[in-house]
Length: 302
Image (cartoon, rainbow, N blue to C red; front, top):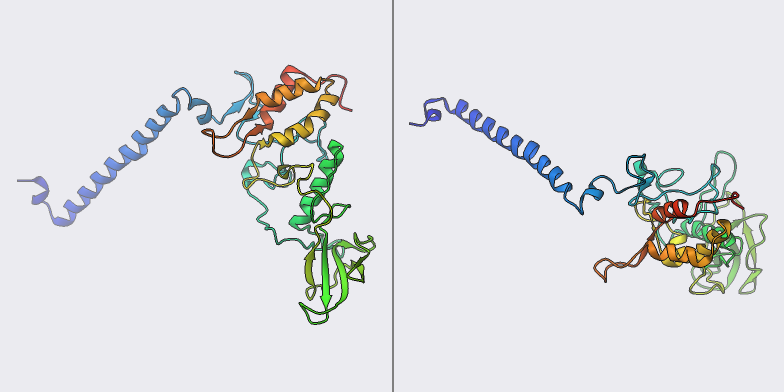
């Protein structure tokens, strides 16, 4: 006769439950984790399991090939001797692994909040943020930073149009919503009406928001990944187009031949996964570390 059958039913049930807990604890709490640790040591998986650390063996890691870094000075200015990563919204300074995330702003976020004083800071729209970044990259790389729907001074080219019948009718008033007074609006007139600069604190909610494309090329000199952050804010990769845009600057500051820098870019360019998934990318962290190892900066940055 089964021993459990001679026990009160409630005791037998508790013993069965205890056996199940013990068995699952040994299986899932001990055997499974140890098995995963063992599998992670298999050649080909070991590096990723240890964080894909970069640097010489036996020394402190210089970073990870999976997490981007900001190559800037204490004031946030880009260091010209390094390839620059894409922007990051992870943390105040960017690329903070403990604050991974995106801005969560969408393409319809085009109107800035203009500051009215110390306790009311300005908040740039996604469009103005992209425009400002494009202008800054263009100045750094000595190319045009112009983009569609951006003003020459690097904010959104967005008008607030007041019409006689709300959405229709003749234009009665026009305001450049992202250009605070006394800035001169990017357009003098719109449909015969003088364009005004925006007065901080004034309510323009009754205006019809009208982005103006402008005459910027459809394919700007500054690539899209140079002005937009990744969803995680930690992506270490940039497009080959953005890497090539920066090559001349890095070569000049490091006193290298352009062909040498282009060869390094090609070395650290990864093709599409399985030959057809995604796009080719360049790991900026690996590329900059390779530059420092093989071609250390001499004479200081200029």
